[in-house]
Image (cartoon, rainbow, N blue to C red; front, side, top):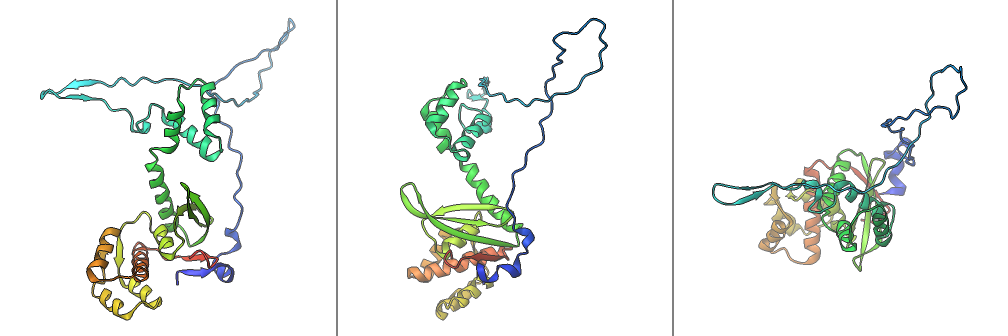
Length: 291
């Protein structure tokens, strides 16, 4: 069974050594990059130098600078013009990766508002408009979403168990649910419009795309009292891998599997089968309401 009540089953699976509050620790001192020798203000005549002792000071430099990339232009023998391409790290912006990272950290991690952030950037000499700042915050974040999905898949591969819970959430003016999947190794959040089992399995399924009709999927349907007629029909296609959700839903249309509840349960089974096919074999704890 994939879902187990947390309060009744936690202790046999997880020892106390895994439950701890993560503590932030002070980092090591940065390496010395600049040295200055300071002599006493007044040295009496006849004094003998006795060496020197260190007095370490950490400092922070925040200043703006401009970089000019000269993009060479070449004419090919066919008469076409080709140009050099700026670094992909710029993500198409006219602001470097360091300032992009600083802006995202200040806005999302530190809760600095856009007007405050814009004022700070102007104070240190960065020539940026309110619109450009908004674009840096809201656009071109596909790599972050990809990394987020890869984090979940990697966390699952490295884990012995998962905990999950959800809470009501609003996104872009719409009611939804924020689901957390976590253990002592990682924490992952996802906001969707549903809190169904299909939704939870879909979250676990990221970033995979295949839907697998294997023995695990058939067993899932049997365990959830799926109609015997449809179980027998689907058994005829056992070990078929559908390469996308679109292909799986087209297959349901072809065999005449209708009814939103039937299609939802069958999709749950396919997601479950795919997870098992990818090596998912974990105990998942919840409060009973999440899934």
